[in-house]
Each structure stands twice: as structure tokens, then as C-alpha cells.
Length: 277
Image 1 (cartoon, helix red, strand yellow):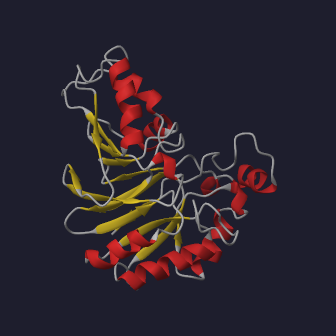
Image 2 (cartoon, rainbow, N blue to C red; image 1 turned 90 degrees about the vertical axis):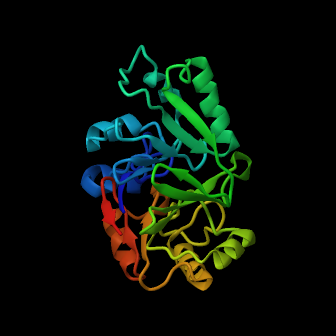
């Protein structure tokens, strides 16, 4: 599989839109890989992960072709991961869609409710523009050629957040954003799953800050997360781990994060980074 990171920041972006802290001012000055937009990724140019307000920017920047993108899996309805207001732009007044194949949005009840609201308000179902599919934790579903299993995330429980296991039958990855350390039932399920991850994208919102175990992770707890995955047998020395989803609150810019992460065998994402596994 190929995964491309389109956006790699937390909710405020990096630098934060209104922020004048040292980390944000440094990012503005250095530019390049230190500039991060809101979190989104795409697999094989066809399976979209999350739909933030920066999606339009990502379409223009990376040449995304929505004629190829039929499926979008959503982790949770925080606006930096899910901005359904832009679904209005798929109605007939704003978009010529020639194949009558809808964009299918997959998510838990909170995501489906917001998606259905937009579908009903703009008659998107009548024109085969958008459809929604309810997903449930631990229940595998298919999206095109991919087998996908949602797992409960440790993050804003009222929003029913999930992370995703994604497999094309050859490679398998874990996309783990936004989440802290999983709850015990998730570790138990993973231990019994027989799954082996080729690639893990893991939340590192806390950056160099320590002790982040709930909601998000930092570099120190990413190491703990990796150890726990290895203890379940789902990861080993051959599994590639990439840190992603950074906040300016985590202190480190890209260059510093890359240096510190390398000490523990982690790769570090940046906007536009592509990985093959």
C-alpha cells in the first residue's frame, strides 16, 4: 500500500492561526516541513482518511482526483478531522458529477448523524452525491478493495471516536489518530486478532511533552504504545512506526522531532510525505 499524509497537525494547525508562541514563530520562519495543515491522509490515491476543513487545500496542493475517491473513513467529528459543511459543494449547483457514483462516508453514529443532516438538507442522496455508512467498533467492513476494522479510540468518548485497521489483503496498517493509550478491551482484542501490522501511524500530539496517555500521546508514550502493540503480537521489529498529528504545544519543530524520534526508531510525518509498505 501507499499512504500519503496530506495534513499532519492538530486542530490549530502548526503554526497556529492566531498563535505567536516561539514554536509557531519558528515554524513560520523556517517553513517547509515545519508547516502543517489539519489531519488527513489518503491510501493509494483512492481511500480518504478524514475530511477536515483543509480538504480543498489538499485537493489543490496534491492534485487529488475525486473521480477516483469513492470512500472516506472518518475517525471522529472534531472539525480538524471532519468538516461536513463542504459536502454542500457536491450538490448539482456546485459540482458536475458524471458517473452517478456517490462519495461514501463511513463513521460511527455521531459522524453518520452529521453526514445525514447534510445529505437531507441538500438532497445529496437523490443525486447519488453523498451516502453514509454506519460503522461499529470491532466490526470489519469493506470499502472498495479494503477490509477495515474500527477500534475504539481513547479520545472524547462522547463522540464515539475510532481508529482504523486497514488491509488490502497484502499489507495491513493501523491508523491511530486521535487516541491515547487504548483501553484494556482493545488490547485484549488485538492479542486475539492474529493481525500483524506492516505500518503504524501513531498520534504524537504532545510532541516532547511527557505523560500524555489519555486523548493523545507524546513521544514518551508513543514508545509505550509501541511496546504494548509488540506485546500483543501485532507489531514487531519489522513494523514501521511513523509519528503524526503534531501540536505546537509539543515544543518541537519538524527537525527537532525527527532527531528525537530517530533515537527510538520512529519516523516522523510531514505534509505531503508518502510511505510505501
